[in-house]
Amino acid sequence: MPSTELPIDKFVHVSIHAGLFFIWSLYFFRKQNNTIVTRTFALVAISCLLYGIIVEALQEKFVPLRHSDVLDLVANGVGILLGAIVFYKVATNFENQN
Image (cartoon, rainbow, N blue to C red; front, side, top):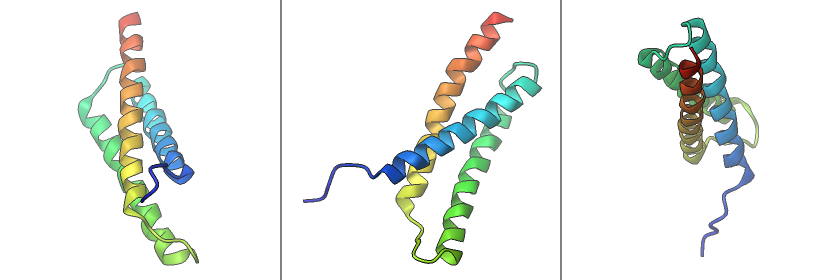
């Protein structure tokens, strides 16, 4: 019977990508005078996902005893989604204050 527990590695992937998306989104949000531009945040999400793919490919190729994992990419995507949800909650508070 397979284990239903998620390894800590997946939590790390989710956390890193949620933080990465949140920080970059907050930067562009503030740079664009506290407005949400959908195109910008789509590009941030795609960039974060590409970053995760590149890291997985590089670790497969150049780091001994490390392998890429599709579930790591899924965790990265979940992290980006979580970062987006948290960001939109925070951003709407900023917009309402102006």
